[in-house]
Length: 188
Picture (cartoon, one colour):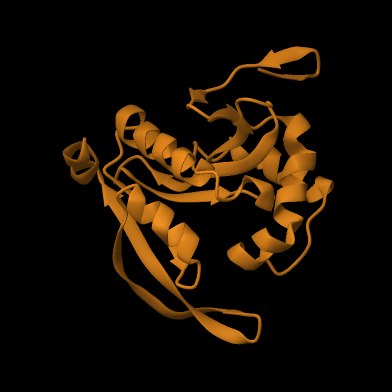
């Protein structure tokens, strides 16, 4: 449990090494930290800095859009430290589809299989609880570690968005990847 504002936060999803918590107002500093991280800016192609005021406005709008976005703070179970953010974006409960994202801004948490565990927890939540049929994502083709995490968790490459974004003086291709409900349950 994480303490903040005299209340104990309870995890919404508990994993072996990490747990997912709802985002609260006292997480705004961490959101700003994540989005200003050099590695995250390069991975997510973020081209301008953010600050707490901007993040507070984003926070206030998060739950006003009929759950269009479901974000979570990721905490390491052993230390209770905040280590990242994960979310479903553009959640469409009619088509039962969403877009997945994950941010681990501090390299000291990379290579510890946290990314894979977080992805697995989110997929399970998406199919078991939200009754989704499809979880999709876009990932730059050069991000080999992320592609491996997604493939390990059942995502398949569907195609390439050619020269989809301009970043660091070049146009970059992105994989479109997804996992379907029937593929997830067939895996088990």
